[in-house]
Length: 201
Picture: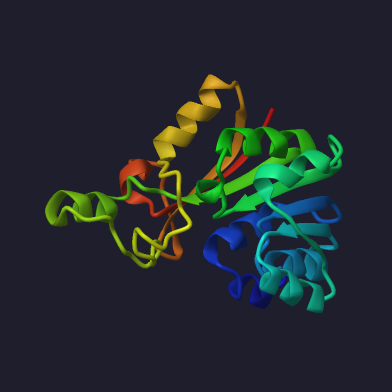
């Protein structure tokens, strides 16, 4: 994929874009303004579709010439047929859903594989904020105060791994980010701010 297009993407989206097979079909759930979809379409020939809850983001994505509908991941994924896509993508959205377990089931029903990225609430700076300050953290990756955050499920990398193991979901790939850079899997639950998983049944 074109290097400039990748550099313009958020770090977790860059990882996803780099690992979606050219010419495949992808559904981006919670696609925002469509930045990832546009990169996949323009530089990898991906048939990218999107669903987004925010009307302003839907308008921005449609203005890019993208196929995006307004919808809610918690209720509207049931309308998609099984195995309609090669990839279902859920980036920085899992922790905002009301029923993340059901949303993940839908992802794996709709797509042969699913990319899931999320902030790691066990990151050491988050732990330190709670331990030493006694307050919910506000960080670069969690920039909104507790009363205004859309995050309603505070999961960690180890929580997600345990969830996958309990449901016999296969991890095909996992990437861990500290800031904008990849970090190793070693102690990722403590050291990584973000995680990206590629999973399948």
